[in-house]
Amino acid sequence: MELTLTRPDDWHLHVRDTDALTTVIPHTARQFARAIIMPNLQPPVTTTKQALAYHQRILAAVPDGVHFTPLMTLYLTDQTTADDIIEAQASNRVQAVKLYPAGATTNSAAGVTEISKTWGALESMEEQGLPLLVHAEVTDPEIDVFDREQVFIDRHLQPLTQRFPQLKVVLEHVTTREGVQFVSSAPDTVAATITAHHLLLNRNAMFKGGLQPHSYCLPVLKRELHREALLAAAISGNRKFFLGTDSAPHTRERKESACGCAGIYTAHAALELYAQAFEDADALQQLEGFASHFGADFYGLPRNTDQITLVKKDWQVPDSYPLMGSALVPLFAGETLHWQVKAGSTD
Ligand code: NCD
Ligand code: ZN
Image 1 (cartoon, rainbow, N blue to C red):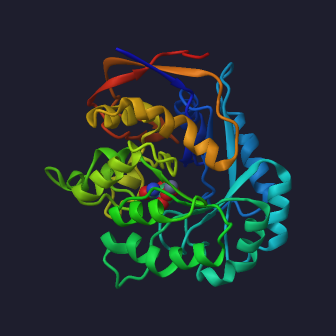
Image 2 (cartoon, rainbow, N blue to C red):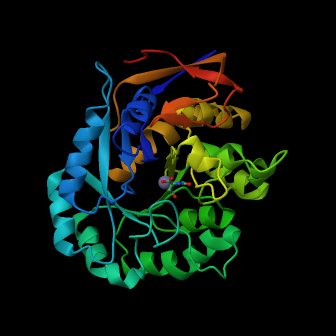
C-alpha cells in the first residue's frame, strides 16, 4: 500500500546548533519542505541578527540536492521591544515569536517572567501579523505537573487571546482534552500543533517496566483520555490543528541521568509515526490536511507543490544515531515501524 501527499511541513522543531545540525537536519529535510525552528539555544535566539545567522548555519547542514527551508523564530523575553518585532517582520525570515514561561522547559531560563511585560511586543506582533507560539504551561511549583497546561490556559492564554483579539496564537504541542477544547472554541486566530508522540503514547510509556527517560518530554505525556482527545482533533479535519513534531534531540548522557532532561526525538521517522497514528484511527485520508495544508494556511504561506510517498513496509529504527560525539536515542529505538517514506520521493 502507498500513500502520496503534498510534501508536509513541521511547525515545531528543535534542531540545536553546530555539530548536532549534521545529524538532525538531514532527518527532517528528508521528509519536510519547511520547519519552524525553535529558538531555545544557549544563548537563546532573541534578535533578528541571531536568527539570520542561525538560518545560515542550518542551511549549511542541508544535504546537497535537497530543498529545505528553515522558518526562523525569535525567543520572547521581558525585554523584547516593538522595534525588535518590526525588524523581525521586515526580515522576511522570522515567521513567529516563541513564548517560554521562564523555567518551564529546556533552555527557558531567559523566558518571560510575567506576560504583562511583553504587551508592547505582543501589540506590535498583532499589528504586523506575526504569530505568537506558546509553551502553555505554568511554572508554579504548587501546580501538579499534569495540570500545568490547563492552568496556563485559564490563567494566561484565555486572557491573552481576549486582550489581543487579532494576534495569531499557536498553542504549541497541545497535550490535554482541555487544550483541545480551548482551541476548538476559540476564534480562528488560535490554533495548535500536535506531536506524534502525544498521539501515540500516554503517560504509561514513561514507566513501562521501569523509568523510561526517552519517553520524557515537556509538556509531559498525559492520561489515555487526553491522547484520545488529541487524536480526535488531529483526524477531525479541523484546520486549527496541524503537525508540529517538537522533536527535541539530547545526547544519551543528558537523557539517561539522575536528572534527565525533557525531549523526545522523532525527526528520524516523523511522518511515518503520524501515519501510524492516523492509520490506527482508520483516518489516513485526513493525514494530508493535518500534515501538509492547515499549518501553511494558518501562517499565510503557500502550500508546498511537490509530493511525498509513504509505503507500508516494515523497517527497524536504529538503536541510536551519532550526536555531538555521543549518541542520540530516537523514539522507538530498535523497534519496527510499519510505514516508510519512499526515498527521493518528489513531485
Ligand atoms: C524541548 C527541548 O528539549 O528543547 N523539550 C521538550 O521536552 N519538548 C523544549 C520544549 O519544547 O519544551
Ligand atoms: Zn518544543
